[in-house]
Length: 420
Image (cartoon, rainbow, N blue to C red; front, top):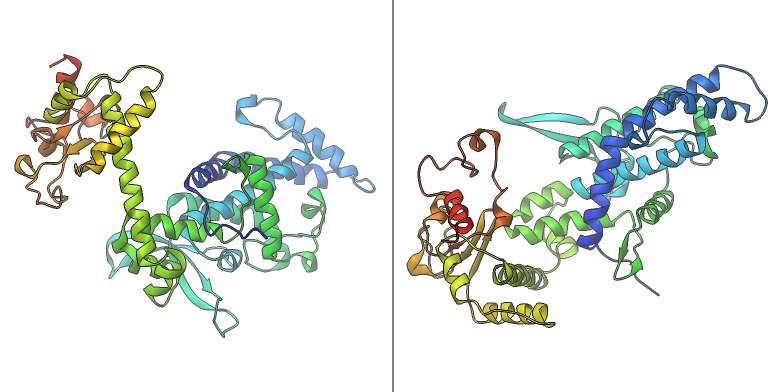
């Protein structure tokens, strides 16, 4: 028996979340306009059985006549139903993977759950999703809880509010996931009966997610990937814990755990295993960075000049394998490599402009202008767009904040371009 994966692999999760956000932000307005057209057409005439479906299809085709294919108009009732189901699945994926609540907590969200909070009435307000935790809670309404929410999750809630507005009005309820799950096609939105509206079961959401994964073509190691309702929460927790071990207390609060130990063991993994994964990720990042520097046609910065002058030349059919082997050899030799958005730090304590110690660079003092005058710094063309902005582009400097006349990363790129 194949056990379900505890989290979604990064390659699958990135495609899933990016596609879900794209559907929630770009496709939602098109689908909502199409439902308005459908309701007007369905209510605008009489007919037995599903006669309203023909009228609605003709109305959708007429409404989409002025739109190009690039704008993805809805041209039939069947397409409208499919894209609505994809929209619901996308909303669930966005909230699950970017916020981290349990499936029961997502399905019991209510209209108006997005709110703003200020710490002690001062500072920048924080957007939160207000709901309830039901796991291990004796009360019928659960334990009140708030999740910090990014803009994409806020947009997903807004889409759910728009989709469920008609159902909520008919039923006199405020749950966002109210649907007639036992209906067929668009009849769910035609002559709605309040007693047939309900919150879906977890099994139904799993089926919807698996259809969504098949539609996206999600695969891992040449096998189709099966989504489940709990993968988003696991993936969210693992992503945060692997990138900042110090955030486990905040992560436990976000997930609604009473103790950090539950987050550490059940979601991020044990201390030993988590440290192993962190070390493996850092190792792979270092190897990839060395491969890039060994293969790049040119490098800027003082350390970049040294690397270009001393690196061996790789040629022949086995060039990629030789590059990877040499990069791993450099990492195994103990060369500390700092990787940041604006370049690479081939760290040597005696040359450290950021006043680092034997363990590595000083993170408090690392910034583009400091690194640019350091003998440990190397930069390639792929870092050129990082930090660019309209205000700095006008002055010819693409670092942010501007270096204000000090040695900056732009000068490192200039010297690389001129062959110095």
